[in-house]
Length: 88
Image (cartoon, rainbow, N blue to C red; front, top):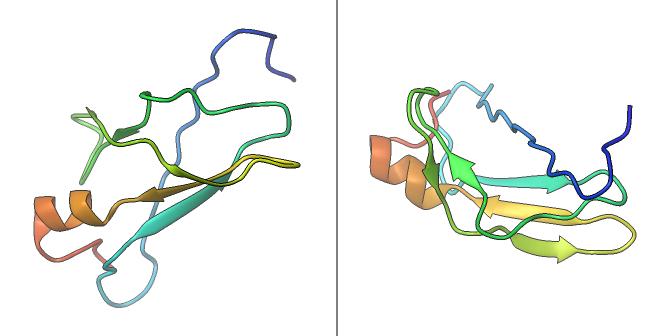
């Protein structure tokens, strides 16, 4: 099903480290479905669980045509909360 026009759609991106070691300098790239755009000031982050979400800076827009590609830099949020990166 499509997203109705002019109605915000919420997307949840779950990031996991499936490697044996901890991940540092973590960045996440996300491609929006064609026709959708990112609403500035709405990105939220939760770590290590979903008990509390906080706003984070807007992502960098790597591409806007034909689809919007966003890059979120999670480094400051992971390192500040754990000092060990994203657990592997």
